[in-house]
Length: 304
Picture (cartoon, rainbow, N blue to C red):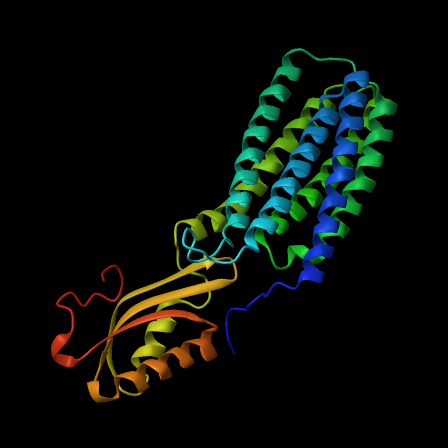
């Protein structure tokens, strides 16, 4: 069974997905405006924190929308691998932006501890309740798209985080109403900030790995090397490079020492078919070498 799945663009599916992303952007921007106005009116920093996070989600969806369209462009002389990595770059921008926002919220939350401000609890509870509904609607709109794109998946997880933040703000507003605990507001702000940082740290790693041409988690490079070395007519494999061109496309480059140069073309075709059938690798560059013409540097990885 191939370890990698190939995702082809279907115009009708792409158009429907674009409409879902556009709808998600619209409701998040509207919610952000309402939350910021309500936060300023009520004096709730936690509500403004939730609004800023919602705004970041709306902006991330705008970037995702643009990246989806760019990614569909065919390969050309400038981008010979195509434009699929536009979504990976967009995901990196989104995560870095989230980290900056989370740090800003943390600073503001600490400031509120030092200079407490009275908060209007009813406004906080009502607006955060509306925000929770909008977050869930947004998550539902992009749930299906999130399965195939790390960029959309990041936006989806952000909305889930927003929903959790809204629940926390509702709880905080309720405690303010019942007990007058104003200190709850900056505490919740710091919790939201901490959660955004944790979530961003978890998400940015795989994005950087793709951009750094890191090998995929599956297939593993030792598994691929063993499969190539075990193939008929192959004596050795070295200068092996395995990386993700984009999220769902793995590429391979290797020097292969063959036992008999007379069957070179057959061996190459068989190896390419093996890589596609076993691992789903459709882009492979194999340099075949005879036993007497092999490279002096025979390191498996890091040469060639």
